[in-house]
Amino acid sequence: MTTPKAFQALAEPNRLAILEVLREGEQPVGVLAQRLSLSQPAVSKHLRMLKDVGLVEVRSDAQRRLYRIRLDPLLELDDWLEPYRRLWSARLDRLEEHLNRRRQS
Image 1 (cartoon, rainbow, N blue to C red):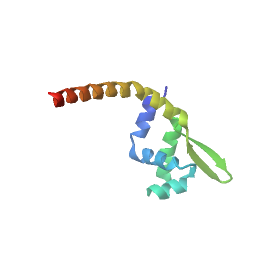
Image 2 (cartoon, one colour):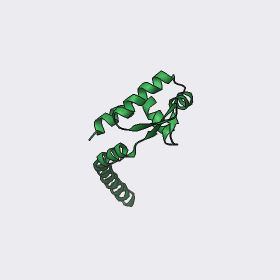
Image 3 (cartoon, one colour):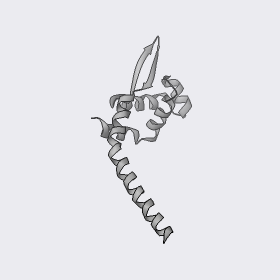
């Protein structure tokens, strides 16, 4: 599972911002650079990291390279987070029960 590497990649704000833009659909490096006010070499560097951990893929369209999100690694992240969601949900449920008991007292 590539989860720790994916988390590390997404911890960088520019890479997370790139994924946010790619949620809208495929984009070339130039559009990403313009939308994020970053240089094209900087965006290319971040895309390379995202590609290395499997979060994005690239396809050629004539002279352009279009980047898009790969969903499988995000589903793996979601699966990895599930036990933590259950843990917090249980704790929040207990807190709610405690607060309800205090209100009734």
